[in-house]
Image 1 (cartoon, helix red, strand yellow):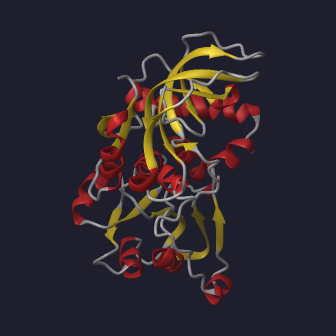
Image 2 (image 1 turned 90 degrees about the vertical axis):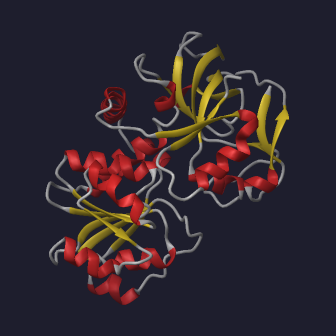
Image 3 (image 1 turned 45 degrees about the vertical axis):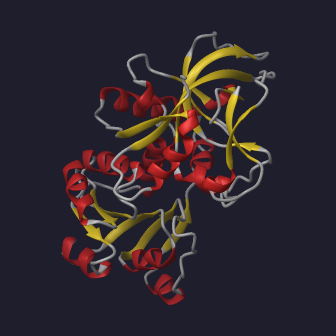
Amino acid sequence: MKAIQFKRKGLPKDVLELVEVEKPQPKAGEVLIKVKKANIVPADIMFIQGMYGIRPELPQIAGFEATGVIEAVGGGVAYPQGTAVIFTGTGVWAEYVCVDARAIIPKPEAMPDQVAAQAFINPLTAYGMLMEAQLQAGDWLLLTAANSAFSKFVIQLAASRGIQVIGTVRSDEQKEGLLALGAKGVINEKTENLFKSVKTITEGQMVKVAFDAVGGELGDLVLNALQSNGLMLVYGALSLRPVPVNNGLMIFKNLTMKGFWLTTWIMGLSKEQRQQIIPEVLGMLTKQSLKADIEAEYDLKQFQQAIQHMESQGRKGKILLNMNE
């Protein structure tokens, strides 16, 4: 089978190769999935560079999120062959992959594959972080990297609950689309003063919670924009730099800075919570009350162009890999 693999850590353009590898066979508790479409997320790029929380086991097939159809099952698995599924795993940028049966979700029949390929990581992370934030209608939330697929899900979910969202972007061209989704304000971090802009938009209230995907100097500015007793949830480090924490600010404003990782959050849910949350999120995506934007699809052999497109500025939707050659 074909797979996108790397034998050493580094930039995708330098280390990724399209190779022929042996088709895997499911062990007990696993399913073999014929992958149909795969998502490309920032975590994939960091994983390839060895900068993610999970370390690659070289040689390593890349990719974390996809949709496909169960072709075979291992012992103790009740899913029938032919079941369409949404799933996460390590090494999904391949024609076939074996994953733990506990890590798959049956795909709603009405959900297109283009949506299913991105229906796990970003929508559930958005739902989970809002749940963790415990915001109420009227509260202010600040998002960095607001034009990302994740942030667009947050804006839609928050707006439906009356939560007021401010986003940061790097281009004025990105503002109109986010305001149309329900954001109350959008700040160009390159040309506008973040603290003053947040103060103006919130009429001096500042924000109760921030979700930060960038870190570095922007993360420091975000901390300054929090109310007293504010919370910053950190879920990424796109700048590849840590947030320079001001101890005095943290102490005198009684701020909290906390990490968020989807796997840890899901593991902490009760069975009843999982049975309620996952169908709710998938239902919103299927009915398009929660919209998932797709900008382009590329064949497996075009993976380098796909990654370049995914990393390009001004992108307005997800970039997917199509495994149906």
